[in-house]
Image 1 (cartoon, rainbow, N blue to C red):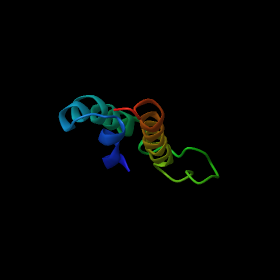
Image 2: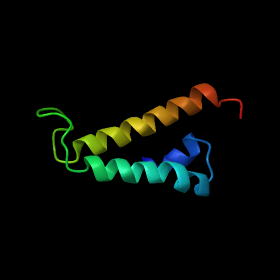
Image 3: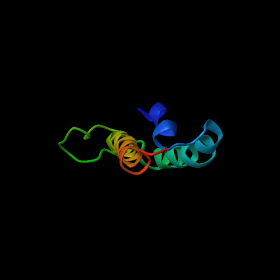
Length: 71
């Protein structure tokens, strides 16, 4: 979930709010009513937002496990 992003990104709350949360809000404003496709799991209104956030969490989790494992 999005609540895990600060940990996955190795950021404190202030850093996360200033950099990542602002980006998420801008992305949401732009795509919140868009379906990702016509007939897939994310085909409902907001599907692009849901899928984008899902991918962001997975990417941050992978980044943490592959690049920050010694921290």
